[in-house]
Length: 68
Image 1 (tube, helix red, strand yellow):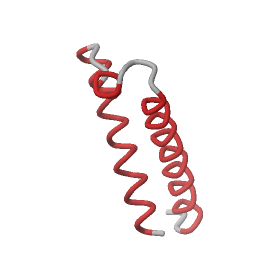
Image 2 (cartoon, rainbow, N blue to C red):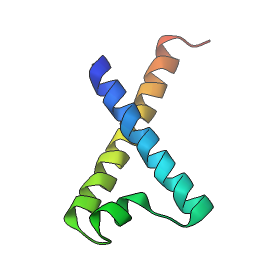
Image 3 (cartoon, rainbow, N blue to C red):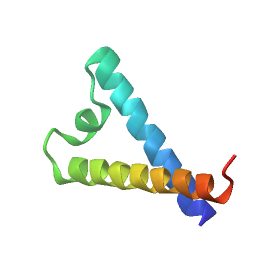
């Protein structure tokens, strides 16, 4: 499970960096690497979204486990 958590965190960070590039420089790294509407781009965005959901669930899991 720890490996899945690390992979999800890496993809979430990559997504956050991409959103930062879009916000600051109007540059989308994913679309510049894999074309604008390709299937690979949609897969990458889907993986990042799923990883974000995994990280949210992990956050709530840790809050329930240790309610400090």
